[in-house]
Image (cartoon, rainbow, N blue to C red):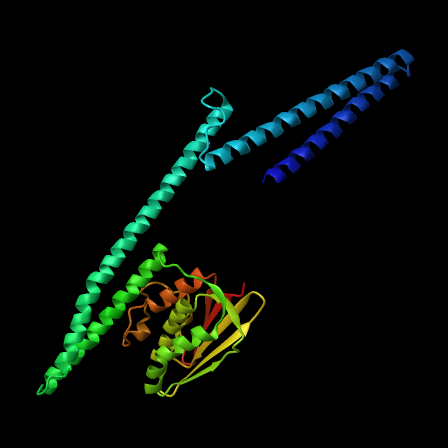
Length: 343
C-alpha cells in the first residue's frame, strides 16, 4: 500500500511540475511577443521564469519530503502500536499525537477482543468436555445393561423386543451426542486438523470399511477406482469421517441391489473424490439446503437420521481448504464430489 501511495504521489508531482513549467514558459513567451522581443524585457522575463521555476521546484521538493516523512512517521506509529512499544510522540497537543492515540486505542481494543474470544473458546471447550464426559458413562451403562438383559434366559418375546429397542435407541443417542460434540468443536475451532500431503486411498478405504457391512446387508455393490499414488493435502482421519458421512447416506437412500462407485481424479490444484450412487436422488431446489445443519427433506422422513452428517462433512472438508459439489437426478442417483487441495 505504501508503494502504491508513493507512485500515486509521484504522478501528481510530475503533473504539477509539467503544468507549472508550461504556464511559466507560456507567460514568458506571450510577454516577449507583446513587447516586440525587447532585449531588456527578454532578460527580465528569463530571470523571472528561472526564479519561478527554482522556487516552484524547491516548494515541490519540500512538500514531497514532508509528506514522505509524515508517511514514514505514521508507519512507525502503527508498527509501535502493534508491537506494544512506547509511544513515539508522547502526549503532545498535535494532530499526529492524536492519531497515534487513536491507533493505540484501536490496537488495545482489538487485542482485548481477541483475548475475550480465546477465553470464550476455552469455556466452550471445557463445557463440551463436561457434556461428553457426563453423558458417555450413563449411556455406556445403559447399553451394557441392555446387553446383559438380552442374555437373560427365559425372557418372553415382548420383553426381548423391549430390550432390543432400549439398546438400539441408546446407541442412536450415543451417536447423536458424539456427533453434536464434534460439530460444536468444529464450529468453535477447537478441533485441530493436521493436514499433510498423503495418498487419499487410505482415507477412502477407512470410510468404506465402516459402511461395508450395511451395504452388504442390502446387496449394494461398492466399487473403488483409485490410483494408490493420487495424493492431496488432508488429514486422513477427518477426511475419512467426512467420506463416511456421505457413503452412509449413499447406502441408506439406495435401494437393495444398488451400486456405489468411488473414483479419484487428480489435477494441478485439486484432487477430486467422486462418490456416485444409484439412490433416490435429490431435488434441485434442495441441493443448496442439504449441507445445512439439521436439514432433512420431507422425502426421507421415513428414514432414520437427524441431518448433521453432511453438515459435518462440509465443515471438515472446508477446514482443510477444500469444498464439496453435488449433482443429482431424482430417481437416478447423486454424485458427491470432494475437492481437496494438492499443495
